[in-house]
Each structure stands twice: as C-alpha cells, then as structure tokens.
Image (tube, rainbow, N blue to C red):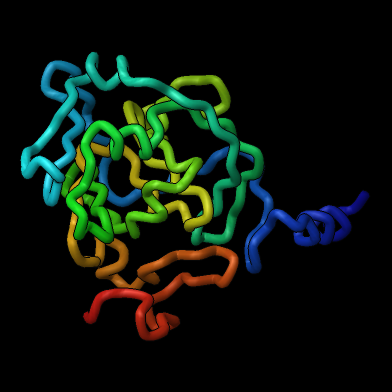
Amino acid sequence: MGQSEQAQLQQSDPRLPPGQRLQRGWPVLHYGPVPRFKPLTWDLQVFGATASAEKHSWDFEGFHELPTVTVRSDFHCVTRFSMLDNEWSGVAAATLLELVPPAEQVSHVMVWAEYGYSSNLSLADFAAAGTVFATHHNGEPLTVEHGFPVRLVVPGRYAWKGPKWVRAVEYMRADRRGFWEERGYHNRADPWTEQRYSYQEEPGDGPLR
C-alpha cells in the first residue's frame, strides 16, 4: 500500500475529527521549559468558590492515595494530529468534585499548571466521564515531558484544554479565558466543529474579550 492510500485510510477513520491526521508516536509539545519536580513541596489544590469557602489540597503522597480510574479516549491536538484509543489512569475529575464540592453558582473551572499556565473549562466538561487527572498513559507512568506527575485529560476537547504539570483547580462563578484562549485560541475547543481560533467564536461561546 502506498503512502497516498495510507493517508486516505487515515482520513476516512470515523473517529478522526475534521482536519486531523493519525499520529504514530506521541510528539512533545508545550510552552516554556519542563519544570523540575520537587516531591516534598508538590501539592494539588482546589480553591475559589468551593461550597465550604475553604481551600483544599493534597500533597504528593495524599494525591496518590485517592481512588483511581482507567479510561480510554482519543487525543486530538490543535496542531492537527490525533492519537486514538489511549488508556489513561489517574484520579477522575468527578472524584475531586465529590471531595470538594463547588458552590451552587459555579459554572466553570480554571485549571492551573506550573509557571502560571492556565486553561478554562465549563463545569460540565470538567465533570464529564473520562476527564481525568492522569498519572499513567497506556499502563506506563507519564514521562516528565508529557506532564509527570499529573496532567489533565479532557476527551472531546482539543488537547490544550488538558494542561501538563497540573497544580490547582479554581472553581469560578463566571467564565474567564485561560493562557491560550487569551492568545487567540477558541474558548470551547470542540475538535468536531474545528473550534481552533477565537475569531470563529459565536455569541455565547466565551466571555467578552
């Protein structure tokens, strides 16, 4: 089979959103340097509009004592590559919502990562089945280049919505743009409708700029 025939088969896979291609291997893409992991000071925080009005946190050991799940999902990067049938293991976002309930008015979350990187999500996307704070990919611990110790995986959204090196979740009563959203990326990031850039946004897709 020639390369053109293989490309046609790839593009015809019904699991591929428009404009995406199948990827062999897992490219390393991120903004800024790879952070140095410091286990004695690492923690994961939940703050903002919590139901208790208090901040909650887990140190590295405590986070790894939380219940874990294993899910399978496809991974779609806005740079147009896709990886299908990934196995992710870690702590479900729904578990954090159970442990630290949000206030009734919360509609969105901001996920914070090392170096102040941030990504906003609707509460519905964050709570969805399959959204997971992943520590493992395909049965192996994440490498530092791919987000060790924790990265967020959000099926159904372009991969920039799932930051590497996650450190905190902020509950919000109103939407606010994250790092890439402030730099011209679409606020919702649905790969099936190619929501790549902010100029494509319709009224109601995001907060006023």
